[in-house]
Length: 194
Length: 281
Image (cartoon, rainbow over all chains, first blue to last red; front, side, top):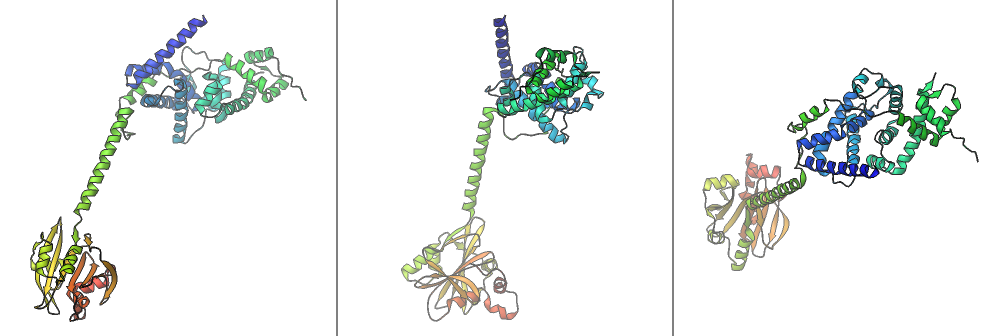
């Protein structure tokens, strides 16, 4: 079973390499395929880093446009996902700087009317726990939120997070340690049974 | 050594699934301080929640619209890819070469007069400057209109008995280098007038600062000739006359430039020159 899983992973990686190679030649079909492969994770990351759904859609869109235009600069020295996440982070920062309202999601956001529109995908089941977790994550300060999102939404290792955020793994460990305490406290408070 | 009492993993698991009881104050406080329990509790809670977000449907159409738009909003310099680098480098090289050629041609356009060559001829032959040796030295020069020569150079036609005997011109691009030969029955003097931008070569002769009737100029240290070089407004003037005790060459040069008219109250070339930029040759 493990061998089969490893085989699928290798095949997926090879397929992605082919898609990236085609994207370098501005192949529209390959660009669409690459978009389909990564759209949800890019959008999720943008969602947790921006203020609202409109901003996250813009960030996701800008991210993919940058990916397609700069894919020639991706030399395969790191994983494609690492390169992609870095672009999302930089785009989100640029976007915030441009709009001069670099406010990360606040609790009010989740009670916004747009919440329905954002999470209205039929496959998703809204539950209290999910909403609580989102609330807790989005109320974290920016410097703790990015590592938490990459760690728990994207399942990246400390080294991968360090590569994306361009800082030493030790810094990420320290930031996550503090974030865990803050997050645990927030989650516990939000999820106390009355 | 204080032993930390962690929350049991089973209890943390239950907390993650069901939430903390309202009276679990101690555990709540512990979670805010203990990194180990906090991390485990966060991990367990995250596992029970699905945090993935689906991208909206219209995202790709927005990207497609931008992909097919001409990039007018943010034009990029240069070209992408390795061929782009080659193209950009080639264009840069062509530009540098063009600028170099342009500069070279500009340099060529600046007229150059070798007065030193004429002085050397005079010194070697011990001859006085004359129309004949001037024509011989500057063989490319041609006869020029008298009025035009005087108008362009601002020189006087006559001074101290020296009258304008011949005027010649050397065409150097768009610039004229005018040679004026003044003479009396016994003597002659030559004035070479070149544009200010022209390069005048006076050979290896030394130059010393001189002052003739208030006009600051340079004197070329030459054994047999009196040579003055002055730059006034748009022209450079080189006066050459064989040295003798009968006439003061400096004064003659000043007179030819119009110094005598100062007393007549007319705004002559001399007055205009003395009043403004006649300070530095």
